[in-house]
Length: 117
Image 1 (cartoon, rainbow, N blue to C red):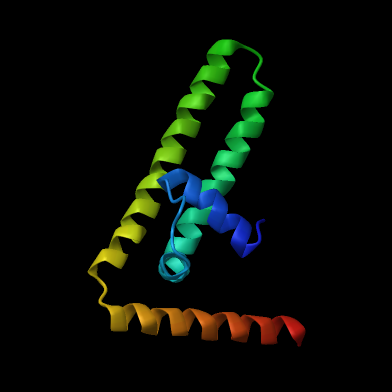
Image 2: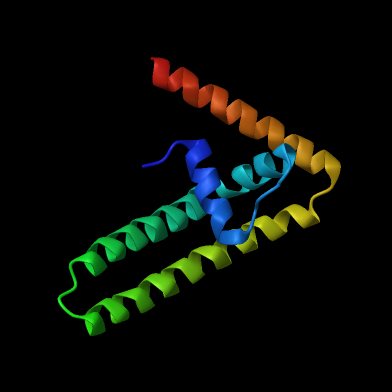
């Protein structure tokens, strides 16, 4: 659906992440990359996209407003998940952050190798 950089930029919009350091971005990306979080985020993004398409096809303003309420709810859920994930960074010491960055780099290298084969 998105490149990793595109997804990062999109998700930062939900949590006000402009001006974030490169290290902070890497940590947050790593924290979001576990299967459970990734699935939750992907499901919510798919739901939001589907609802927005449905809203454009609404036959009345009442229906569009109801769909918008569901969009708002899904976007708030996404923001809550992202804020929860982002808050974990505050509990990591520098060594843990460095280890997490190294793990993310290794994961990305392995992913590139798998794609090439």
